[in-house]
Image (cartoon, rainbow, N blue to C red; front, side, top):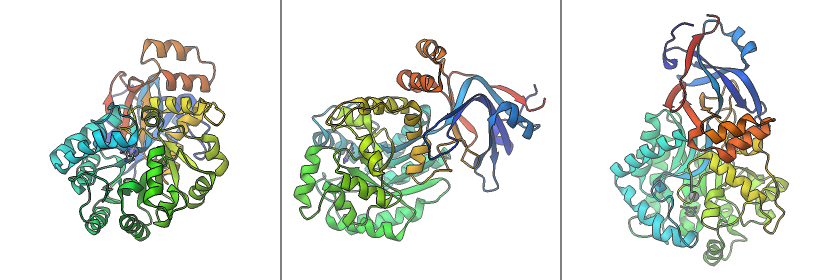
Length: 456
Ligand code: GUN
Ligand code: ZN
């Protein structure tokens, strides 16, 4: 053993531990290596990417002399991808209400008004991003608020942490309180364009055109958002869709000419690749097919849907119609930043017999939805959410012995599926021993690395 430089100081570094990844990123089949090696390299563009992955005995031979961080009892896995979350709702979490619309009115809108203050926005963005990292989430598609300053604060906080994050200013020019409502629709669209030019593609940041949901945008604002989307084909689009029955009734009243809720977005030009719609619970198959055909995807938000009593995502219907999906916390409607809690809730939701038969989602499939599958839904397959060579080096180290119960239960697991399921059902932020972003360990909780050099 010899002392090594910290990982960030050399172009190459290796990480020896258990490994969990998806060899075919489009297939929800996890591979596990009990003694694996992950090699990371800082490329000429300054981005740290994965250079090699596999069994230690095979991979180590190819990288003599490379410094190694050794975590003998941990398992390295891709950083989680959260497909839908609201950073300004960090302080709304755990606010009960009689469903979505009262919750928005009584808690969410009053809280979001505070984000006109850039100091408050930055303090919250810093806390939020640190909380994501503590929970192993390294990429998120995120709502800001209607205030452009709230986007600047978030992007600056993400940039300071070198994170790959996507966010956008919320567009809402009606049915919203003073101080949150876009008073001038044309100005709100100009602000969106300005923010795209300021932030989209800067380092690892991306912009999402963000109409809150159909009831709080005029037809003019939705169509304006669609025109901006046409002008910037690689920016993201994010909104909410078919979450709650009262919401859906309201949409039908406001847009009587539309065939369905989804059709409101379709007519505005807001369905395409990189368009991510949260919830997608109360849909007809025709809508699911239309989403599939346009490349639009669903952000499944089970803790939020259970907490607000919104309903149950229909996985079988999504699969039979080709609608793609991934998992999301939807904080603050969601009750946890932990992807473990979200995966557990997704399992529970799928299990229920609620007008359709319950089914058991495989643990590897749940994990895929929050990593490689989420990345694919975002159009970022091969960039984040996996450990394949070429992926950016954002990963976590799991400690299956993080609690006495986890240690006891995982020790008895006989298959990878059983082991993963124990992590999902019993895990929380304590499971995340390290979160490594761009080769830098931002968090050391439970475990101490043992450093060495390959061949030494
Ligand atoms: N629909 C419109 N706005 C929101 C929001 O902030 N959270 C959720 N869950 N649904 C919404
Ligand atoms: Zn939401």
